[in-house]
Each structure stands twice: as C-alpha cells, then as structure tokens.
Image (cartoon, rainbow, N blue to C red; front, side, top):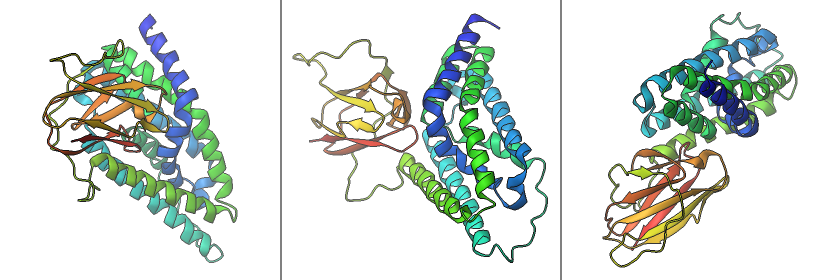
Length: 315
C-alpha cells in the first residue's frame, strides 16, 4: 500500500469518527429501518451484512473516483432526485413500522427476508452522500489513484461503522417493544427531512415570493490562499461568506447588479456547508466563485446536501 493510500485511509477513518458519524447516520440510517421489521430486526447478522454492503460500494466508488475523477461524480440535480427517492423510501419503512405497531397483536409472522436485502440496502447508502462524504469523495477524486481513492472511502466507512452498528442494535431492540411506534415517528420525520433536503438541493421549492436572479453559468472556482483584498478601482468587487456547521454566515449578502462579483467562501467548520452548489455546480470550500453580471433579484445557493441555503441580493 502506497504512503498516499495509507494517509488517505487514516484521514477517512478520522473523518468518519469525528465528523461523519452523526451526519451520515442521520441521512442514511433510515435505510436500516428496512431491517427493523418484525423478525428481520432480530437477526444480528443482518446489520453486519448491511455494513459489509456499505463497505463494498464505498470502496468501489472510491476506486472509480480515483481512476476517472469528477467524470463519475453525481451532479447536484441527480443527488437531489436520489435524496427525494430515499426520503420517501425511509418514510415508507416508517409507516410500515407504525402500522405494525398499531396492530401488533394481530400482525402475522413476516416472511423470511431475502438474503440480499441487507447488503443491497447498505450498498445503496453510497447514493446518499452526507456532507462529510462529499469531502471524502473530493479527496478520492484529487488523489488520481484507484488505490488511494478506495482507501479514503473504505476508511470513511470504517470510521462510521460503530455509529451504524449502534443504531442497528437500537433498532433491533426497539422493534420488539412498544417504543417501535416512537421509532417509526422519528424515522418518518427523518425521511421527510431527507426528501425536503432533496427538494431544496434541486431548487424545486422556489416561489414567486423569493424571485431568483438569472442562474449564473458554471462558476470557475479557485482555492483561496488568503483573504481577498478590498476592491481597487477597476477590480472586481467581492463579498465574503463563512461556511459553518449551522449554515452560511451571513445568510444574505448584498452585491451590485449588472457587474461581476467574486463570492469568497471561507471554511470555519467541516460539514455539509463544506461543499456549496452555486450556478448548478459543486464547489469545494474554501473557494472563490466569480459570478458574471446579474439582474436585480436574489441568487440562491445551497450546501451539498440541500440542508442550508444562502442568498446574494443583487440590487
């Protein structure tokens, strides 16, 4: 194993343990609801198969990203559609659990689950990247090596495995108690939240109350090595936005309509906001995005998972 692969493996494990556990279990953990179903949830091995499917799919995705780069990454609109589909699937699992909990006395013994169900559900989590996953995927892309890319993604899965194993244990215990209905309510809320994030990421909830400026062409992003200085005569003006765990600060910035502007994204905390979708393109923060002249109105941008949004008011 090369030194680069070892380094990325360790970095992936650290990212999974420190930052990925909470965000990924919140975004992807709902798929475990498909295993907490009657006697399905009593089989400890199913959670192991779920984690194995997740490891395989992430490792293969990392190898592809390292080999082919951004050509195999999903565009924001495709991720948005997958988030909506996954959210509705999780909500379906939750409704099923609630209905079984309501009529638990009369519920028939469910049929034995397919042997492929658990690993396929685990493998499907690669289609629902949480905010930290996007950062690890970009590391895999920048590595330029299938081995290093696979190591980064496999390390990330290893780092998040304890949180998923704990969640699986809780779901197995809860599925046999009266708390199943409470778990169903929580899962239903998580599913609807995931679907809502997809709608936000796709920009499909825009209304006339928040008129958007003409979408910018694909912005050219460049890493920010130092703060951008105040605009000099003839220079392109700039605005600064900080990416934090709680969203973008300030949530709205002002810019002059009819002239180009540099939007300087600076990173304060790692999380979903570390990737910003603006002009229909993913940009890894920190970065400077130059926007062409815009008409008066609001230009909306979101984090890579559609959870947090910010606005540029052109006037």
